[in-house]
Length: 371
Image 1: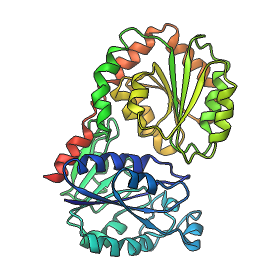
Image 2 (image 1 turned 135 degrees about the vertical axis):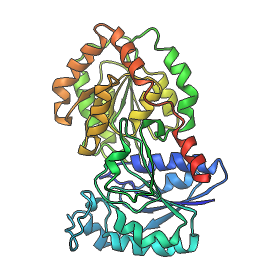
Image 3 (image 1 turned 90 degrees about the horizontal axis):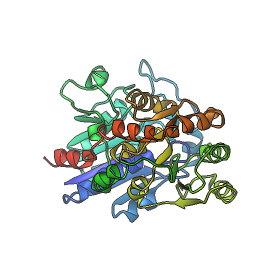
Image 4 (image 1 turned 60 degrees about the vertical axis):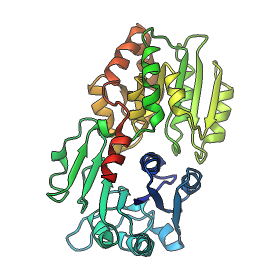
């Protein structure tokens, strides 16, 4: 089976889309599939990581024209609206489809998988002739798609939310049971849940996304300085290699009252989460990883497209949410005190989070695509 992914990472959009596609590609490759990624070479792209994972990668060039387009708000063509995130693409949909067409025509994949907020049915229809089936990964439910299969791994998502956006024969996979997690999360689930039977706060994990272009990590570290963490607490910060504020965060870490390490490009995130007692993290794809391991979380909303995830998990009692990055300094100490006084609150949140994701989504979807 041949599978092509059209997905991007950049300093503007972050790394989450590529990372979840990599998880699915790894699961497919384990079943014998050959996977090819088609990614525009934006600043902050992850093409080298894709290749290091053993998958082929085709780079779409960033020309001076497409670089300029990335900062523009494209207008509608005729009666067709354009996606809200069109400026993330670095080109028009027609230009992007024209660049992808010869790659796909040669490959003729069994599945073309699209994970991009800037692409919709117009792009999909232009390229349908070059694949047997087309799958969309989305979590916005805000634009039309011409696909055979749609995945939305948001907790509480209902297929009815896409009823007006997809063909009547489109197969829908909705809900956090389909969250695309690497197999090590399911493997460490029992260990992680068992160690939370006696709640404590000795290991604090900070993960604000692979890019964190607005330096929320630095704001969290500054706010923690006035928080009553135990004297023997240790802090671990995880960042991506392309994070623009990495040097500043490392300097802040050296000045913290508690031992604080900054890890870059980690490949053992599941173990780090399982060994942590509390996380301060963004409301992105790592939300599902934390739920799978029952890791209590103070969640910070960094973008509008994270609202539904944050609200759903807070309503379920699986996270404590800070609604805006600008409120970190004021609200982080309050949220931290509420979770640790009494400390049993950490155990309660863990118990409410762990049923949300079991960690088998990538396996289930890979099996479905193969069938």
